[in-house]
Length: 558
Ligand code: ATP
Ligand code: MG
Image (cartoon, rainbow, N blue to C red; front, side, top):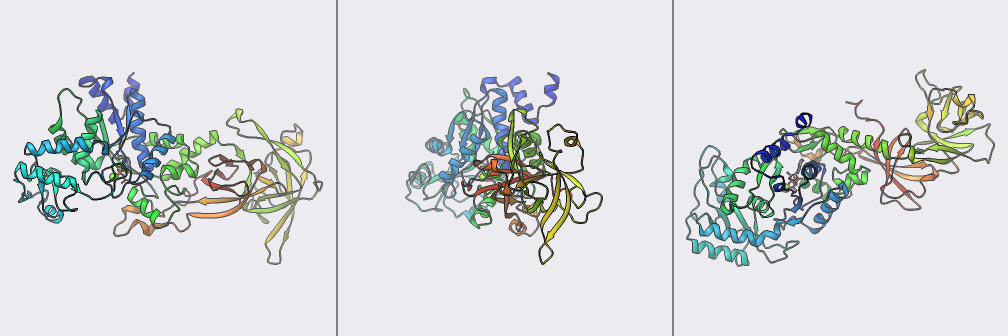
């Protein structure tokens, strides 16, 4: 028990304290509240894992609430994508809610506030209102419309709602305190007029509630017990509470807002607005481009739900913002795929290897283990013949003693096959190696049980049989930005740090067992990394995305 206590994070401490003092376990209810103005990204995964994780831990409902109060930026496409991503991660929401479902209730409460003298219609421009806000050290100035009569306020709000006035003509403001040290309390705007089509309410509403007016009241309507948001909302908490005070009924549960630190990932940007820019400007092919830090991009890149959840859990929740190195995310996907991904052989940069003492025209089907980490994965047979492709960088004509790959007069093992010895090279007129000739030891076949098969040689190479290999398009992805924190650079826009080499497309040769591989199937290309079948893949043109190399190639550069 005490051990369990020690591992609680500060959010869980808040809940445990509430359970001891004010709340029943059955009171607990959480929500994840995305605005449907883009696709979910890896930062959201932290919030999703936090909220749904608490739901699982306390057997409490977790609502999916779309914070859809800005028709200018929100779309059904994003609603659908968000639902798909959360489902894919493996979480189930209790209710699917929309802030727009509460527009009538919010409006009725706004009318009540006007009647109580706690809200008024301001007819100034937004610039004038901003100017009167004052500074943190100097109080703001009251609007000349602050003391409008209740009747006039009601009449104007009605007109705003019906679309009888243009955008920007009036706003509804809460009448709180123009001298509050918290600038957000200086008569914040509750409603603005927008004559835009909303993806759910159509043209019915001409006024739309602001975030602060909507969020806490939505939590209250849904009886959410704990509303967790990121730290920039800390100063909003006072306003959250003020708005709740106006409608709170003692018999009901009162939601509380608590804040945790945003998680940022290195070499990318985690902001829907910035990601939208990458899409709009064609830097990437879409929200699900495998270079994007979106959930759907990571999915297409070959990340598994477990790898993302393990990543989120391992960085945990905290009170201080920090930049998590992307290598940590990569570590998690390697860990997971190491357990799950079948091993296969593929050659990315081929050079032909001819085994001169192997019979021409013969094919042997050699047994190979699918996954040494998972016995139940079984075995498969791979074809071996006289002409193979090996990786160009696995051969050196003149090598030093530390080169444990193929060179002349030295032996190496071909994975799952025989020991070979380099004999000579064939070059074209420009001196490029076109063929490597070698001989093999017929008694050294892996697993054959002979003395020769147990012989230890330094170095094992992967290979594919030229006659049987399937050409495949392989997309090699790299970091999208060259800077660890592209959006935190002084006087420079994040767009200036785009890595020009974030995608390289090559033709590789893969073993024939991959012929029927389906989109989202992941494999370890032995000695190279993890690769996933892309959804662009067809029967005639296999397409693989490199999820991650076997080792972190950036670590040694740093
Ligand atoms: P963005 O700037 O990308 O649009 P947001 O915070 O405006 O992010 P919302 O759709 O409003 O996006 O966020 C839904 C939930 O996810 C919120 O509770 C928000 O605090 C949380 N969230 C968003 N980004 C992060 C992040 N980087 N780390 C942790 N939580 C995040
Ligand atoms: Mg937002």
